[in-house]
Length: 52
Image 1 (spheres, one colour):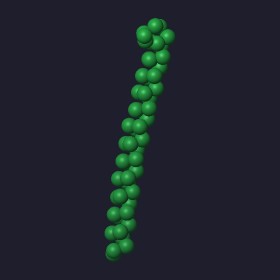
Image 2: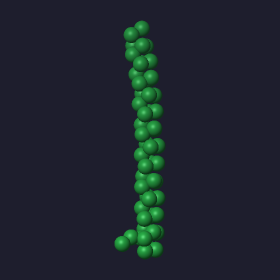
Image 3: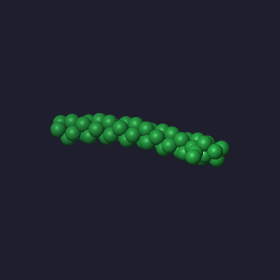
Image 4: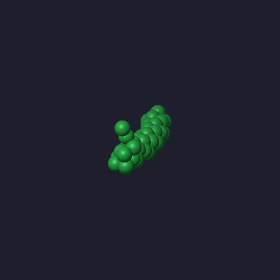
């Protein structure tokens, strides 16, 4: 009986960790894409004489 309970808790914890890592990965990817977009906008504007 204890082994069954232990397996259930272990599986639930693994599912929760997988969800947390997936969420972290999604936010990290979004952040990198936003940073890349901001860099491209800066390069485009600086090419048009925007910076001093």
